[in-house]
Length: 334
Image: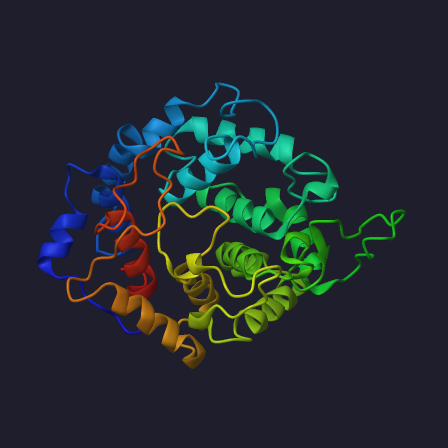
């Protein structure tokens, strides 16, 4: 990928010590920082700001709002709180409460066969949830070996290897009403492949260390990359299910990113898998770059204002969180 260098004014804006959350992410992903400086920024981001605010609302047992698998209520229960924390750069090594939360989630939302479920049953699995939460758990610092079963199930669901049709109710591994077939087929998307789900699955695979990627996982990655590149990603012209055209949310960048997906996250997932310089991604990267304008700042266009534990900034205004997201994709790590 071509590298766009932030102007001094933008760097000062992102690295303002009065705003420790975006400062930490900018130092972590965009600007050179030595380990003492980065460690200090990480501590400060956990001490005050959104990470501290979300953790302050966690039950000591490791859940938010109510016990269980954490899917509801949106967007303050366990699933959504953990997603936000991971995207904020929260780390188990920095705060032991995150370890408690991760263990609680693993104990309440993952089935013996590896399905990550919204209701604790195998039928409660769906690509966007499975991919999201595996990416989240890795980002928080959960060891990959604790997630082997869930990653293996996810890879099988992509390729279809060893998974029976939905109607075969006696099979030990089968598809369900939501996760209804291979290649990201999804019940809510009229049983067609869902690019929102595919993006989350590929994002999770991109975060898995190469030494932990089995041949089955590598095969699933190839299927996912082929699917996401089956159209020009900037068009978002993947199957729309019941809708007549792609969701406009594909082109609205925001923070945090829950199950709704944008082309910025598609580009990030593909770049994380090594396709950042692929010519098929060039139009998407150009679109992302153009949205930053001459100032090189990106606006909050998809906002969860009033729905989560935190305030992420006013809609339609330049936003540090979104700017770090965009620059991370365009520039790569420092």
